[in-house]
Amino acid sequence: MAIPKLRTGSYFPDWLLERRRRAERALTTVVATCYLLGVSTRRMEKLVETLGITRLSKSQVSVMARELDEHVESFRTRPLDAGPYTFVAADALVLKVREGGRVVNVHALLATGVNADGHREILGLQVTSAKDGAGWLAFFRDLSARGLSGVRLVTSEAHTGFVAAIGATLPGARWQRCRTHYAANLMSITPKSSWPWVRALLHSVYDQPDTKSVHAQYDRILDALVEKLPKVAAHLQDNRADVLAFTGFPKELWRQIWSNNPQERLNRENRRRTDVVGIFPDRDSLIRLVGAVLAEQHDDWIEGRRYLGLDALTRARITMIDGDEQTEATNPVTPEALTA
Image: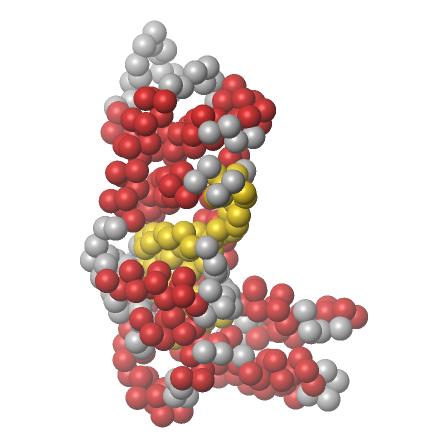
């Protein structure tokens, strides 16, 4: 449909356009702050020209930043009252920030979850100096304090101290080690000449039609590798419970919970915005931009179609409740396991 052009304004109401503007306003304030602080001046001049900005005063930057900071802070600290959040995924982005006259790496910890209605949500964002156990523990404590509950599975790669953090803050939750990242970890101890067939064997596990077949195929892989590649076989055996945690849930959910691939798509969108900035002038500007991007994505998810069906979600919770006693008896979570 052809829409006549107006000399000023738009036919579209402000409430429709406002959400899309948040991330762009965040990008503008980051660039302006960088420019005012003298960070990468030549690069920022080109970026400002690309955005069509000719001049930004300090007062303009202050007003824009304050509005965005209030919005992002309310989003990051909102109550998590749409649970139970049966499935949670977590990851970390490494970004550069200028602190104390030098450029340092910081880690933006992100978590998403599936709420009781089957929609995905952005659960939290925190920036830490190191991607270690202390950072993850503080992150999940904050999520729990805001109402995160009913978690049955947390999917992530093998971050340092991550398993201990969820064990201390999310009782009853299992850890699913991301299949994509685990394959890369396994290849790091596999002779390069054996990569193709070992990778094919590992992928065959995920092609099985049911839980029993998955475990049977895993056993066959161990038998095939124990003599030829004993180090690889031992690695597979040691990580079996974490790699196959998805099998405790309905088959139709496996693709959504056995890897962090959905989270990686979110990370790519964040990277698309943050790469424009390069080096953030401070942590507040990082939270401002990444938080605005996440808030925009959160709204899209809530208004879009369900990520997981309600029937499958209900059966996932029932499966876990029915299997809790058996799980504790056959595979108890020990302090050693939590710190592995």
